Length: 145
Image (cartoon, rainbow, N blue to C red; front, side):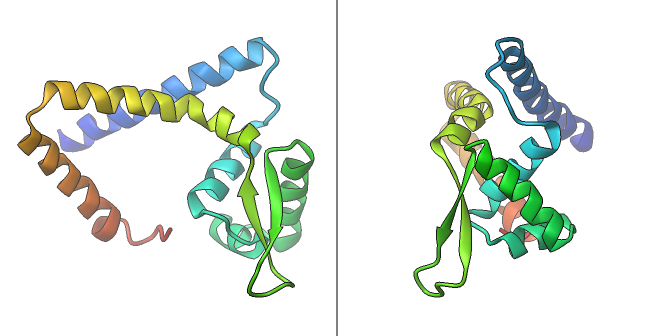
């Protein structure tokens, strides 16, 4: 029952995102392929990774990762920023163009969070926060952000 409930909520967030992406495709605003969208979500979640870190988490070769990064830089969704500590190292940062694209799903999440705050008592919300924090910090050790 828990798995079904969580799966339904997760699926609704994904479906909402895909609906909005397809709306943009109809208007010719979106220029990211499906794989590029996944790459951007990973890079954004990693918060300014290097190409090597991106390659490592996606289990792809460094040349393949560099190729994907170059394409995303050319499209204006990503930029390389030189490290202040090691001038040989560059970090990948998402651009405003990507943030506008990403906000498709983030805005919906904000809407749902506001509905949660209206629907549930503060104590229930604190319990939900605690469950989510435990999931993040303890129950998903395979994913390190």
